[in-house]
Image 1 (cartoon, rainbow, N blue to C red):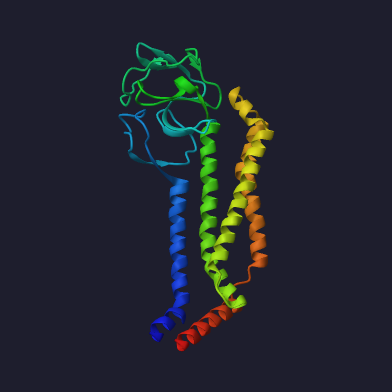
Image 2: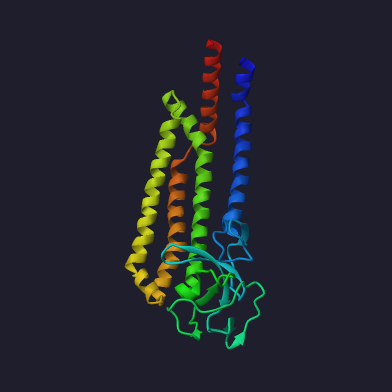
Length: 296
């Protein structure tokens, strides 16, 4: 009994922890792959039939440097609704419908993937419709049952880019979760070394509390910044000025690295649980466990 318990703490604990960190590193790589490069989603509805069926699991590339006619994309509207559609019109194109067919710049399009006749829907657009800069016309492959640009109008390229910004930010969040898990075990051990008892519950409770504080700050920065730039009003008028684009870029790609750098500075200055101190903590826990086992 003693050998089994002491073996778990004496010498093998550190080896196990290294393996645990390697596992978390591998997990981080998988998370990065599926958060930054490859996306997974379940298709909802029949708007992309026959290409994608309702409930079908689909894989897709998340970051595309340039969009082309025929690309299937994920679109997030200002209302928060998200759709999967196919790009049929690029900036500068003239979109029209005639005799049940889609016309781009006056030319009928060959669309073997389309189900049903292509016809205008709703009363929001006048055809032919010329797309302005950064505007794309998207349709569902199931033309007789699809909520698309015929209803909500051409979409901004920025709308697609916002999805990419969210993906990049979620990679950072995932990385932070992995890093927190790696160091929490050491923190709990140090608490036992310092106070004579383990307090996993307090440690994990504080972790949750600090995460909620971080989410609150994140929300204030994001929606406060967009509100100051009158983003919603510009979306309604279909015109995003350069100042707003710059602000969105700074919020998405500038603020997170700054906050991460500040957190890293605090971590490097304050986190000392390595080297000799880590060895002392480990030796203390091994000795304490040995005494407890001998007492039994």
